[in-house]
Image 1 (cartoon, one colour):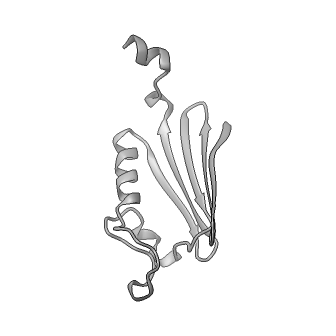
Image 2 (image 1 turned 180 degrees about the vertical axis):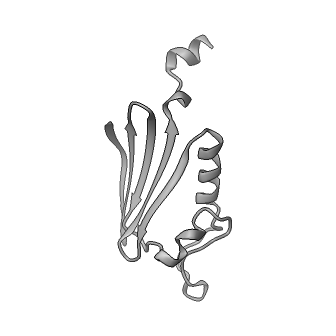
Image 3 (image 1 turned 45 degrees about the vertical axis):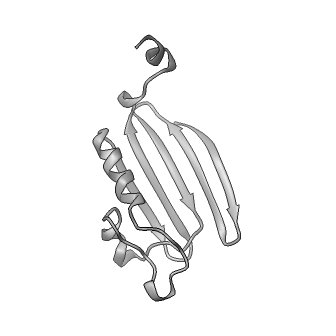
Length: 112
């Protein structure tokens, strides 16, 4: 599989990296951060709409909790999957895997 890092960003409390890996059968989009992470007992809630993984009383991060739900739905509509690996206070890695058959070349786009 060939890998290519697209974006690496720093913010005051961590980092985020986006990598694309193209293999024989799939295209993987990997987003990894060094953020707050998700506790193991809450992993079954990943991808559910309107789910936040930090205490509402001390919440520092905005958002509605729809991002992973939308990404998972889109990946599955294209025959792919969304997998999450996370550890509290270490970070989270989200992998969107799409079948290689869903890729379109520039030539295919232009000839239509």
